Length: 355
Image (cartoon, rainbow, N blue to C red; front, side):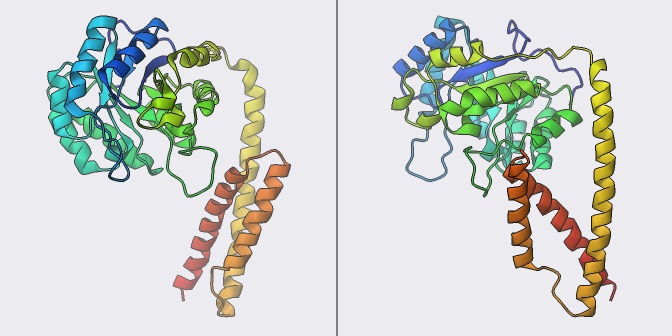
């Protein structure tokens, strides 16, 4: 992938946040045009609408297909906006490119399938079109990177990603858990890769779009990918997570965009404290693993099973409750303890393997 990719689309301002907005699905020509005109009036430059809608189960609205391409072309002619749609197959790519759709995105379900991504990459080869890759539904950074690299290897230079959250078995207020650490790690590895946030799919509820958008800006994301519909409650798909163009404009007006170029000299003392605390954390974890190995030896000598499920569940519940009392997130603490427990089990298993 290029270290310095060109601007996503000509004439679109690079200042944060770049906003891509429009309805989840193109439903009718009237709905598409009305939504686009209202968004254009609010200053949105890139209009998105799904023509092909992969659904979890059969029987739901799966999009209008190629019939909606003419509607997107009309949006371009009448509003001057760029238009974008999702491509899940080579046929989608070919139809969109033939109609001069300005931007394509690859959805979460497609990104999870390397074969499907490669087929799309092959269809894109030789074309100069911006492509955004959503994260796979599972929290798998390497799978996400693999999808991005396949598209990049096809010669696509205007390349970016969309963070839309991850499926999780844990109960949450979100439709898809944000797991911010994953896109942050992606940004660390590829600092020049534009990262956009899809708060509509993360939240699943329109009231969560504003706070999630603010979090994305606070984390330095480049832009927002938001579902906006002229009448969200009448939408044929994902009505709960769409906002009106006017509501979107209000969300954007209230965003606080923090300066990224401010000097960090005044943070050095606090960062030094963090470094010392991290050193202590590593030392404490090493001590804990030493005790875990002692426990492993005891279990080995007394023919006890390594995993003590009841003890583990009690520990998770107790420490998670303690974390909440200390102002931390319950799920954060459970995740930390799960990783620590996995390493403890691994070290104890090593003792058994040495028999």
